[in-house]
Image (tube, rainbow, N blue to C red; front, top):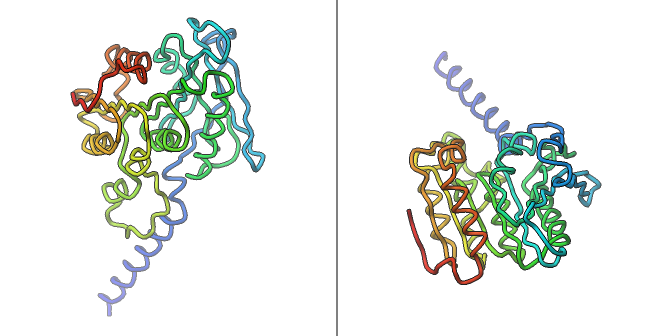
Length: 285
């Protein structure tokens, strides 16, 4: 009798855990840290244009357009970089990275996802993609639409591949990309049945639909998203792709460990992608 009670208790506890995982998976995937936009004086008021975008349900989104100090000419002649950050970040947390990694001569646009940073609402996969589409439209109105690049880190890699698969982009840069939500679930939540998962976040499928050069960075010591996933995403790209391994880097150390070499490789890619100078075929480092 006692054994039956113990088994019944374990079954009930497991069912409750599974129900919580089904109900709150969006919150696990999108923890949505809040923070106001930073003071523009930290970069320079003449370089930062605060943006306010509105989703179809009226949700306000906050963003920054960082104008390049090297940019010259009218909007139709400029290049732009859309930046999509990881799931635990926001503009307030990453503005020093944006300032350091912004390519010369390129305007950079970043928007807080719904529920993140200074944006309203709450995040779901579909709403994050909608916010990304609005960011693309805002960038396309400010620069040459044929010279838009997209960068995505970790969770942001799925947002970036969505944009590259559904819009015209000059090049796609990914950092620490995972294959899809199902593979990540199997890796980190193997005790839960896979049918509970509603999220797709499918980098493998999305990148197979792109038609632009791709650059992928991944830390060799990444314990959250193993480097094998990054290689799989790179291998699924149909066009020219280069894979750069950042030796010794865990998931959140790539900017620090990659340092100047990371930054210069990104800048080189933005400078040459689509010109015929970025090389052909596949390269792995």
